[in-house]
Length: 112
Length: 111
Image 1 (cartoon, rainbow over the protein chains, first blue to last red):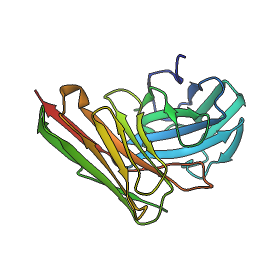
Image 2 (spheres, chains in turn purple, orange):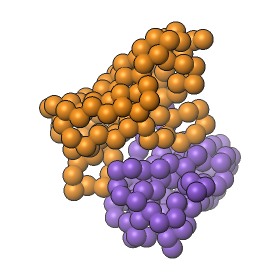
Image 3 (cartoon, chains in turn brown, green):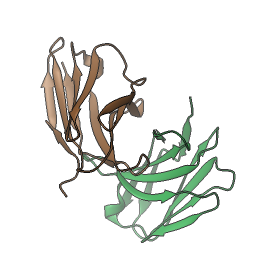
Image 4 (tube, rainbow over the protein chains, first blue to last red):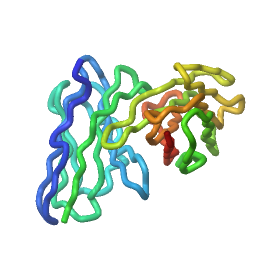
């Protein structure tokens, strides 16, 4: 299995631009999680889906952030408009049950 | 919300030494997990613990689920340079699907 796939691996953009991060979970996994990692705040859960349905989005910082999961093999996290404070590493993780989460390699986002 | 306190924040040791790190919580968890993150990669699950008092090994790694359910420990024996990375603990409550992560322990191993 290829594991969780994320793209792009690195993204540099200017403040105000729209950013879209993509994730392909491991086939057969019912749960998908989006995390943000920074030095100051560590790993923060942004949102998670179960069977493509958003279950808890209380970690999404602002209305500028949105996430979708149109099917079992694809999810996006969108930031519009982006701000410098959004700079972080964003991880997608999937799991067949909710504890054994498998993480992707992450997307390092830099907003100038 | 729940918080996990991981200690130490960082460790710098010599190859061959044993390592101990721990994680404490202000509240009870029913599952404890330990992850390792290599530079530029995502966290990888090392050990999962499901019962209070449980002691589980994975090669040179041994983890324990504290009796009080509020703490967990990870030990690494005979460290090697590839043990370098950040080790995260994570706790989960039954009935919830989310994990609460600690801030991590950065381990550096000198050859």
